[in-house]
Amino acid sequence: INKSFCKHISVGLNTNYTSLPLKEPFNVSNEKWSSFSFSIGPQYNVDIKKVSVQFYGRLGLSFISIPEIINFYPETNVTDLNFNESKTNGLNTRLGINLGTQVCNGLSFFTSAEYTSNLYSNVNYQTRDVSGAIGATGQIDPDLASAIAFENSDFSFSSFNINFGIRLNINQKNNRN
Image (cartoon, rainbow, N blue to C red; front, side):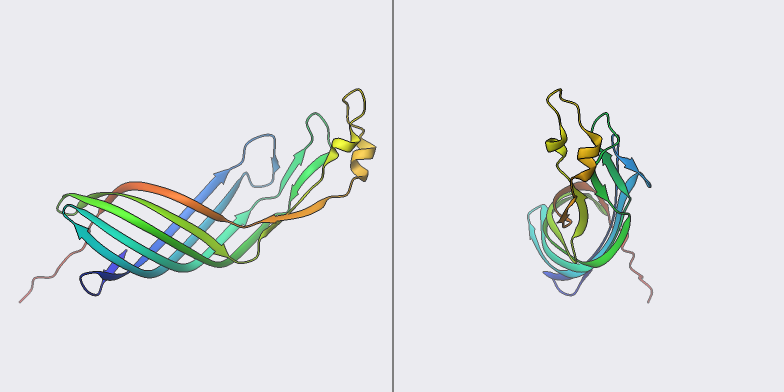
């Protein structure tokens, strides 16, 4: 959604929902990660013949839900990866460029490239390297593997996205006298 203030300057609003299903071999409590975000910010618009170009920056909020994830070393019950179930909220940023072309009145095609980053604490998880518990036969010793301590790690949700689609202009003007 965009609100123009003059020929080249507008304010844009984005909402996004992402769902990432998890597949085997992970033992999960909730089967998918999900994220919802909304952001608002300035936009600079340029029209070049039949192509519109929009440069934008947005600041907003993200709500991320992470299921409990437990990964077992193959063919054992030894855990080598562990995410605790969590929900986290925080600020996000978006920087991007959007290219569009109008097909007919009210209908256009677009493609965009954007970088998104979340400005809050990283997601924590634990891993352990159980390679030291593998014996000469190639089998893992579960008692030795269980004695190996977990190491804490973390990561942040940042991404580079390429989007494309159809845009409908539902702007209605009231022509009453």
